[in-house]
Image (tube, rainbow, N blue to C red; front, side, top):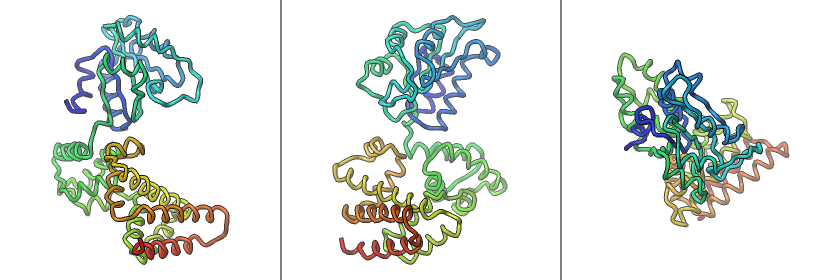
Length: 342
């Protein structure tokens, strides 16, 4: 069963307990739509309650789940931010009686649908409550949606609206949104309006309507630097400054990119897979994929030198009056010269 099918079953099958894990804004919204279908709108005021575990004790939610519906057939109890299922900690000292949830799972109310939201990449599988929830609930993991599935889903949405998008345009669309499904779906709305006559979505359309973030522009800058295109790198850097981007912010993102390349290089040497890196580094799989492709061209020492140089530039930008443009130009030139020395 696909993730889409699992989400649709929430409002149809109405299992007594659901555990929703992972973080994905688009699918979270879809889950909430299905949740609200469980209870008729006119009954939701009395039979739909939400409890945030960072603000409310778990026992309050469990007591509500044990209550009978008020002039209705079903009661819906939504538990948000169940951080006690992961390794996370709340800033607020809320005392939770986990045993009450364990007891409830042994004998859940047939008149209540209990939904537990744990928006974390990974749960602590060593905990007794996590093991019990996995065996006693219907579990949906929002992170179980690969790059291929995301592209297929968006392509189907485009087709359903009577439009066409070629492979090059889809790849560029995915790259510019970094595979963020929520952002892709939002961007599609203006793309549909722009292409309402032709019904054709091309690379030119994506280039015109879907803007690059500073992070993506800096990624292009990184590519110029590491491929030895020093002149283009310096020219592009000046373009970013003309767009009113702050030198210290550009350097911070550059530093972040090279840190990622360095981390991925090290993990690749330890035989980590792409999925393992995604989990370890807690970033989007697409960023890991791009980093893996880039790092194959460079030695560990080259990436380490680049990263440490950017750290030094950061210190100078914060503590001296050195010219930011000159600092970057020297960095690009030195790195270009070092490229062939490793």
